[in-house]
Structures are given as C-alpha cells and as structure tokens.
Image 1 (cartoon, helix red, strand yellow):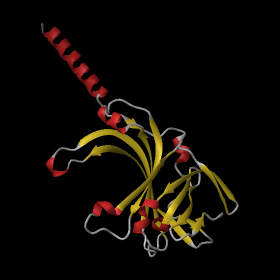
Image 2 (image 1 turned 90 degrees about the vertical axis):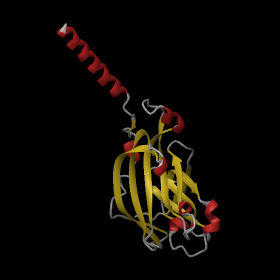
Image 3 (image 1 turned 60 degrees about the vertical axis):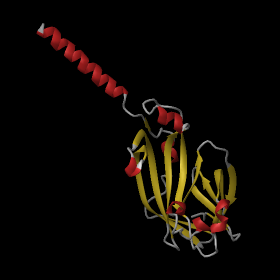
Image 4 (image 1 turned 180 degrees about the vertical axis):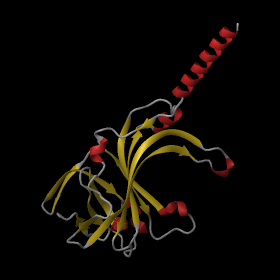
Length: 221
C-alpha cells in the first residue's frame, strides 16, 4: 500500500513539473541572421559624422538583454506579465546638444495581441528597430507627450540612397513630419530637427533632412 501511494505521489509530482515547464513564457530570441544586423560597427566611444563634420553623434552605451513584455497596472491593480524578447540597445549622444537617443533592435511577435493572449506559445515574429528620444520643448503639463518613437521592421520595403561615395541599398525612411509644429529652429539636435531620418540596415543612420531644409549625409570615413 505504501509503495502504491509513493508511486502515485511521484507520478503526480512529475506531472506537476511537466505542466509547469509547459507554462513557461516563451522567449523571442535573436536568430543567427538577426545577429548580423545588430550594427556591430556601432562601438562605444565611436563618432559618426554628417555633412563635412558639420554634425556628429557618439555611441555612449551598448546593452544586449532579454526583456519581458509587461502591462503595468500601477497602484490600482496587478501588473500583467507576458512573453520575453531579446533586445539590443544602443545609446547615442548628439555632439552639439548633448541630448541622448536610443536605438532598440528587438525580435518581437508580429501579432502582439495574439502573443499576449497565449504567452506560452511561440508565434511568428520579426526583427524591428525603434529610435526613442525626447520632444522639445518639454510639455510641463503632460510629460507623456515628451517622448517620441520612430520604428520600422526589417523586411519592410526599402530604397537606395547615395552620398559621399557610398551607396546604401537597404534604406528605411523615418518620417517625423507630424512633429513639425514642435520645431522652432533652435533645438540644436539633428534628431529633433529631422523631417526625415534615413536608416540603412547595414550601415545604421546614414542621413537626415531637417525641417529647415538642410540635408546631412554620413561621411565616408
């Protein structure tokens, strides 16, 4: 009798462990192809110049980590936790203004709602990039409006851009025209002055077109 009870207990424990393993949240990790697109030439301390050294930015920080998609409920409720995803963060500093911006390259599910509804199952995903920064001047009445984020997905349609003896063939154009009303001609940061930001999948940021009509392109160095 004791042997039977012990055997049943072991079986129940094994079933419990198996169920727990099945309930682990999935992780959307970088693929081997992704790792070739992580801007490995963006090295901490390196400068990138635009327009005959007229403008520059510097890489000041690099992190690669696994993050969890979380819906923060605040003080009134319980946070909801979902799937994990891998992300590389590259922090840039505008040389003139000292303002900082972050490139976030991540492997993320295509249908986020579907992935949140069942975070234990892995769904189709894609590699995407965000450029996060601050809007100027600051809105002191609603700080949530002080940030902006521009993004694209690898695999989206691209175009070609040539400048300074270089030809970029996988260029995504990030359109910031909706922020035109913010611009007052004194920001001192090419990210905030940019009407268009040009981003090549292999080279990274390769150009800016400003609200004032200035065109800045990556120098061939």
